[in-house]
Image (cartoon, rainbow, N blue to C red):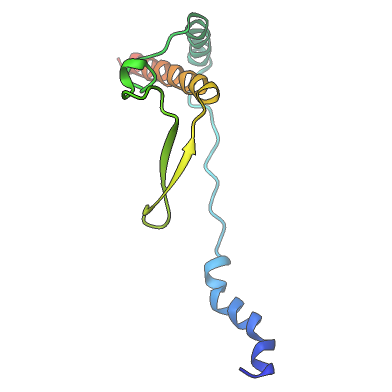
Length: 120
């Protein structure tokens, strides 16, 4: 390549990739609370009671009987890459993640139960 080719290399690379980076913006989803006020109040009240009582629901991998022989998982392998061929080992320190997982499990279980009740 001569000096002239090097000088416009940036412009040529930009032009060849422009269609990949200058697309129309993606519309943002509508943000609306799907719950009526009464249902939301019920959720918060039940969640608060469950938290005070230390309820840990079954079926979410949160109870010792649901773990493998090594106990609460110390890490999780997340697939990454274009085809999921790479794996990232993500540390899950027990003192950080187990309380969070239990909180999410309680909330999800309560939401599932409230949704089940509303379908009747």
